[in-house]
Image 1 (tube, rainbow, N blue to C red):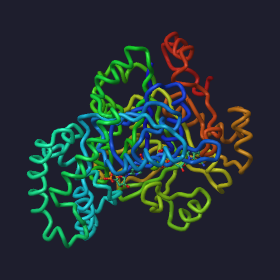
Image 2: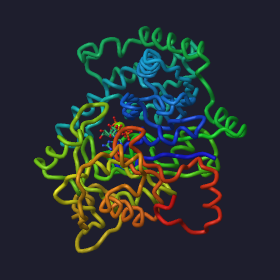
Image 3: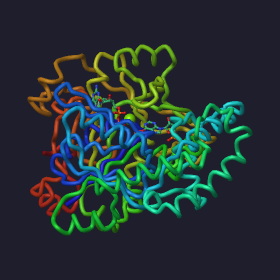
Image 4: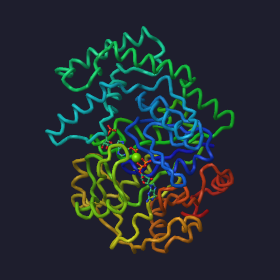
Length: 456
Ligand code: GDP
Ligand code: IMO
Ligand code: MG
């Protein structure tokens, strides 16, 4: 039995924390797309880990795998491994031989392209980590893959070809402040060193084979998405998206397992009780600037990777309904319920109006999406309280208004609630159902329809 955890909005829904909570039941935790543009926070008894590349399950000592769909900055990879070691952990990490490497020139090109686009107001507001350019090279068949690091002749030949092309994109590579980013010899030496380290530690695997084998041996796999459904390159607010597929289909192509492996278990959508976006693109429920500032003060809405202020809006159900459909959510984890405490009003967007028509899910272009007016339903608010104590007591200890909110969202999405987040810490997540609980599964098999939203 496996499970997949997916961001249902635009990233930073609290996926890291939910992977941590449910990761206890998994043997292997796999990232299948993205790279160090992610920032996943795990908080365990006040100790916080912010992981950009390693799967969040490594904090619990699970085997962490980076699938072929990831783009890997080797510098970040080894920095994170070393940092965790310094903190007393022994991360067991495997990387796909087919994963692409993010090179220093990808970062330079990411920044150059953002600067050029900013003059046309089309800047995506990327994290600047070279993610888009690395995926461009993958699709254009001039990328460097992890396996290439072990084959010096192949590596040199590929680098010479790629670097010559990159140099043509940059007027004066030496003037970009990019150091050795366009120097073949330097890149070759650095990559060979990384290759030797990966090989010496037995970290390189064929992830399809590795995961299928572990699954056949009865081990459980948790697929950890980065980013979110609405910044998916296909299903998101294109062109204001990342360059990979965080959606559930990505877990198949991004690891090399068959669809049946991903289908053998729950797909849990992580839903933030409000909405945040780092970077540009549509956000119909966005707060006015002064309201967003106040909210940010209390909930700390700054990007985990870039430190940029997150844009903030009301929970947008049309967006999450589309996510439930494209990912096939069998459950949700509703986070940040505590963060809504003390608001003067609480709104949820239940539909959009576009040119006199009511839409239940978003349109497919940003131009249309930008013209949508959100239609709201208002809810009773609740006051701040001791959330840790509430988490200890369980779901029924939540304020009644909060339960009404949770159950409304669950019923609208036709998805049972697996967890409710009332704080960042592992102990501040109320678990109602566990995707790795076999008795829960038997119950699901017996039920032809869906359970009561929050039945435990
Ligand atoms: P991810 O990228 O989806 O893993 O999310 P991030 O780690 O980037 O951002 C989520 C932030 O909210 C982190 O600082 C988490 O520790 C925090 N967080 C997660 N769940 C909750 C919750 O239920 N309540 C509160 N107040 N904070 C939460
Ligand atoms: P996690 O996994 C929030 C956003 C960037 C930008 C767009 C493209 O922590 O939820 P990129 O660097 O990927 O080319 O940037 O995507 N973005 C994220 N926003 N959370 C993330 O990851 C993000 N990863 C990328 O802000 O708008
Ligand atoms: Mg994040």
